Amino acid sequence: MTAEDGQQENQSNYLTLRTIVVMLIFVVIVPFLPLLISRQWDWVEAWIYGFIGVFGFAISRILVARRHPDLLAERARYTDHKDAKSWDKTLSPLVGFGGGLIPLVAGLDALFGWPASFSTPLKIVALVCIVGGYVLGTYAMLANRFFSGMVRIQTDRGHEVVSSGPYRWVRHPGYVGALLSYLATPIWLDSRWAFLPALFLTIVLIIRTHLEDTALKEELAGYREYTEQVRYRLLPGVW
Image 1 (cartoon, rainbow, N blue to C red):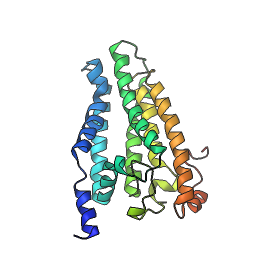
Image 2: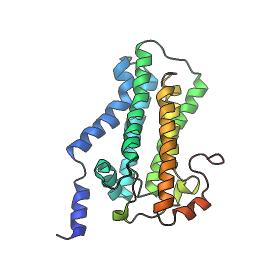
Image 3: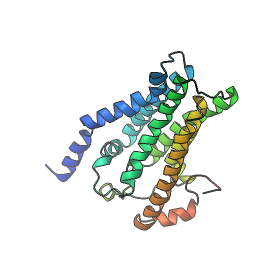
Image 4: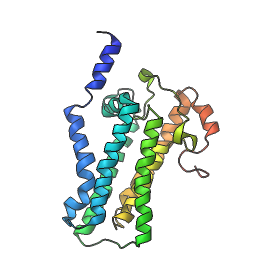
């Protein structure tokens, strides 16, 4: 068996038991936490939020599997990479943890009768932002076959700079999509308290963006030149 054959076999076997369990928790259970916690089965916004989470994930992975099947293997094994940045071994789990906290807190809000009441127009804007966040994140993965779940220089996969698709506008469009969804969710689910984990996630992602951008400038050939073409990391005109 050649090294290439071994790599292909490893990529075909990336759906380990651990991967399946993690996917079940974060892709199926977490989006429906507001309903499961509050037990308010007539909560329309929570049902919509849950289905967006499940189908948004499924559709994005189907599209990515068609274009970059090796990327799914890379993301599924993200905890196994020995060359991942030490700081991201802390930040990456914090992002996952914070992402689960938002629907959890929203569910507790509804359970204990604390929910806010945002206006319908504002909630429609929030819904558009949530869906838009998934679309932008998917677009970033389709454009970037190095969209790993852990920050590392992927020399084993021929890592190179990506400047097409949404990377023409900002340097970290995947994080922009995530932030759109995170910050809009408390409004859609009528939960002021859910802004606390959303703010926590915003801080974590800003720190992660800064550290990742610095690492790419120092270690990835051509990235420093790319930063001169695309000046902003997350928000055009600001940062």
